[in-house]
Figure 1 (cartoon, one colour):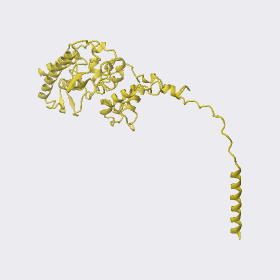
Figure 2 (cartoon, one colour; figure 1 turned 90 degrees about the horizontal axis):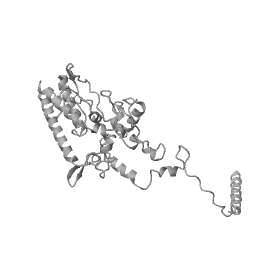
Figure 3 (cartoon, one colour; figure 1 turned 135 degrees about the vertical axis):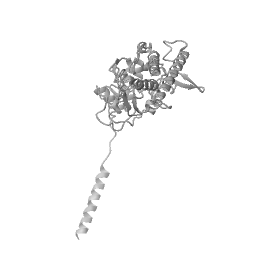
Figure 4 (tube, one colour; figure 1 turned 60 degrees about the vertical axis):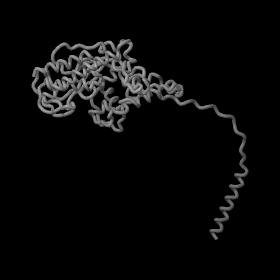
Length: 346
């Protein structure tokens, strides 16, 4: 009996709802409301779209620079998996920015989810949502780790923060006691360019040291030549390379050089590099004779005099610089020649 009553009550309820629904009428649509405001850039309440299009326009400039960077060594060979405290300041983007902020030469901890150097490493991306976001994260003069020399390469200071010689341990001292080298990786590390360009950081035995005009005349250091007008994604611009292939031949991207060297620059570069490579070969031969280096250029660990260790340091510093003397021909020439003379007399 109760089930029947419940059933009838449900029927009545459904019937009532059906009648009410059928009686509800929809009136005509009202007038359209006003458009909402565009989102803001999150800083000063201005129109966010207007801010974004100052950079994110249809010029394809960002795309071009991104493609250049993707072909650079920073993007493809930066070893950014080296994210521990000692390596992260230069091998990861996050570590570099932390170092610039704190001034420390290590990060507080291992960098999680490390990224290679990218737009955010070098530029104030998405700080103002205007072209000011392309401002460099730092252009302050740099105090070199190896000896405290302060260098000022303008925009190139950004590069010099990492592209500088490290302090080898032990550090050979001219006239000092012999040193014991325990690591085959001993030396100034792989990016000593700022030291070479500034004319400092080598084992400066003997006399006659001077710098080429690149040290003082090139006001923006690395940037002037390495980031000159790009040749596609092979050289210059955000690819930063100095050579490219053209019809099967390697050419030098001299766009940043011709302001000071309007003619004959290729021959001058070739002459400098030929001379420096010959000096490197002479020094390597002597280091092999002194039992400090292998035929392939590896360091033979053990005890050696400071002059021999200094010769190893100079060889590796010039070789790792990569320019074969072009960055600072005067300094490199003297550095190698003096080491050769010192080791030839032993």
